[in-house]
Length: 211
Image (cartoon, rainbow, N blue to C red):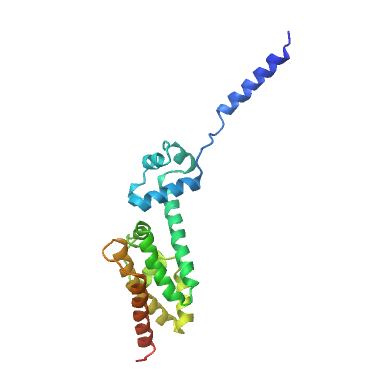
């Protein structure tokens, strides 16, 4: 005998069984996983990130990580990309200042001060074969051409002179930034500003043949 109530119940059970084989819904998004990975880099460097440690950070197993990313290489790649975006925001701030090139140098150092492990990851690691400074800069900084244009515009220098000024100032600011990131030395904002200004003015005058 046909029982409509029983038939509806069995139909519901079939739907539930189908649901059992549907892809799982993870309680974390890709963005949340990358944010957690970035926090781990901030605290202990990128070496601290493993599937297990990242899962523990999220209060879970490593399953959500591998459910949303192909492998840990992809997680690390996306983490570095997100960290570079943080750095880029500092440079954008520097470029919008009254003296863009000085602003970029100041923000570069500030990034090292505020995010030492991010700075070490991006600028104190070897990427590929060692090369001269002028070849290295475009490879490690996506903002190279934009910064170079700001130098040419601000100081009315030829392209080769602008490249040389950029090279000299990067070596100098990188030195200060590295000392700060590794907690070897401390500098006040006033000390950083005056030192960058002194070096920059001296170099520009030298390039223009001024005394």
